[in-house]
Length: 463
Image (cartoon, rainbow, N blue to C red; front, side):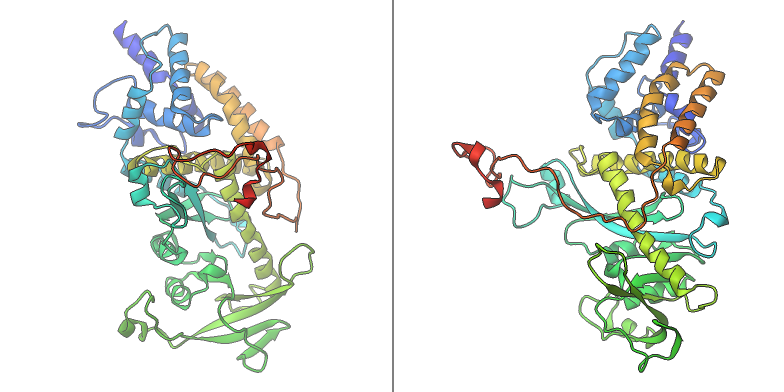
């Protein structure tokens, strides 16, 4: 009876394993030989991981939600031994090793098998890079690691993290990431992820990555770059090396003078090449609603026969996809505001968000490939909603392989039919439609703050 009860406990909340077991191998989740997660308990290493995973994809996202879910599943198997208290689960989460989660994320990003036809330019992998900001609970530990904005008074703001991600443009998967505080620029965070880029890749970024040093460093690794020109005057037909076509020039990019914040000492900086041979493409924006009428792209893709100016411009327009990837993470999966109260758990929570995101991207790409559809046209939000509804049935059918297969096929069918309309050039203004509630702004610590009388007539913008 004890063996049967332990078997039931092992199966609890592991219905997600039936769906994502191929993307997250069981070898990463075996109990440790000694130390944390070495004894056989309800919150084993595997159960804790999948419970954490379930917490990430839940609409509520709280610890109490997933513990009550686990208690319900155990009760379904005639086991009333689990308390509704979240203490045991939170302790088990802390015992998860960050290095194990890093390895799982690495496996989920490397296990995509992308067809050459799905690659956006000449069969080459395109890595799109961008940064964003996250906030978290206002604890002293989090404030020390990721300080709040200096213009905010103590107790009136939240710790702010700067995050830089590298995404595969063909699949939307996260390849790597780096975190810093509000003082970190995106370029140093990019340099921490140089191992992500392999020979033959194409780097796609915005004007914040327009750097002589970084373009040259990637070029030495066999990685080409496509970025908009910034902080330099565009070359003209009179100053270029060769005119390849209309608005398409072959140019020399001179090495800038050394400066104090340069990534290399002065003597090493002077050893960089004196100039780079680049291609400058002027793109005219005909679509109404954009902020600019034209802009310049510089790239190390010099062959106009293989890489036409139009194909490069079209690829740069797809850079906006990275904003949609972040929207899927921050808005749809609710990563915008992290919940943990210590830096160590914040890092683990961030990794779990990335793992869950990549796992859902696996489902989307697998479905798109099976039905010959564009994976970027299948809704991430629709896939997440379908997964939330299917999770309950996965766990109920944990002991029946044929039932698991049927539920999984229904899940993939639901993902396949949720297609995003094709809307090229759609205007995406960064504006709020809903008006703020007429509450005053918190400008002092909550224990010192005095509410204004008749605050229902107060305009927050006037503060």
